[in-house]
Image 1 (cartoon, rainbow, N blue to C red):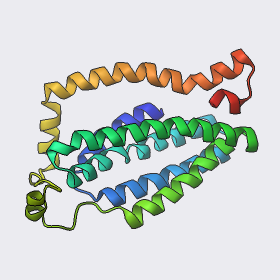
Image 2 (cartoon, one colour; image 1 turned 180 degrees about the vertical axis):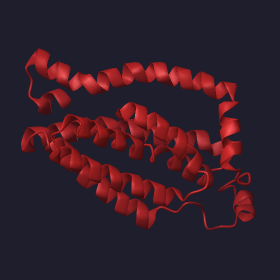
Image 3 (cartoon, helix red, strand yellow; image 1 turned 90 degrees about the vertical axis):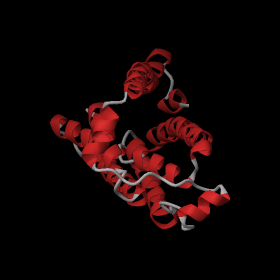
Image 4 (cartoon, rainbow, N blue to C red; image 1 turned 90 degrees about the horizontal axis):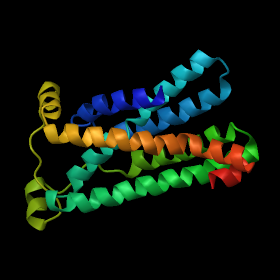
Length: 210
């Protein structure tokens, strides 16, 4: 449910990020995910849990599109590969760190700790985004381009025009299929790896997560 909702959210929010403030989208996504984590920890009914986790998948998809939009605003085309490479590396390192933090929290506070501790960190991150993230440089685009700090972006297109360009790009379809196959392996491991290690090796959840 989370994966399907996340994929739908990426598709929709990727278009919305062209028109909405990255700062607001990121802050809203972080706060909503924090709230849904807490609700999931309180709930007990299966179908309600599935619904809550699907909603969590959707709001988590409010993260990557506005991040890429802000990166495009801040970095000229010649520097975006390096900038996004650093962002992507940070994303992977942060993802690895969540296993350590959530594993420790579950071991220390019970399984709900793996939901509540990340929620606290998400709220802190949302506050940071809201007060410190600038959607784009304050320097006028022409002056910034001449200084080599930014690039002049194409005028914003309509939702329908963006959709047509997205779906009509064969290179994007190729990357999408490759990423789908990659993530089948990646999430197959990250979703079940801790459980597998805990059950096969009889480790504590803290050690298995680490």
